[in-house]
Image (cartoon, rainbow, N blue to C red; front, top):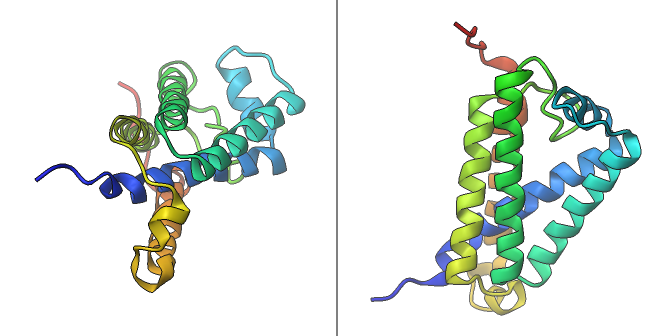
Length: 176
């Protein structure tokens, strides 16, 4: 019995949607991204932060419209870059905003780093195994795919909460 590529479709579309949510947030409110870039020693203004948001939104759209090894690889690369950036912030500027989702501007956290590493892994696995296109998949899903889309939306929201809101309410560990 071989691996069914549709098994990764849900997680793949979740991580694609999550990068789109971050893109929209940077377009609407780029200040947190500007602050995180500055804390990492990368001078950037609102225009650069918004350009990054536009790139994230474009990547999400392409991942949904044309899922495949190239787009999944780009998505995996983006999340690996985000993970490295968060790792750097955790080491050098843990009080800086992470800049991922605008407001509320949470600080970088280990949980957020894990979400990015898992997202990069999911996207990489999807690129290696393949993900069916949404139109091709929806016809074979129950309820015209509506339960699938609800699950993807709910999971995307949960990943957003784990990355941006949960670190605001959990106690932070003090560096030793």
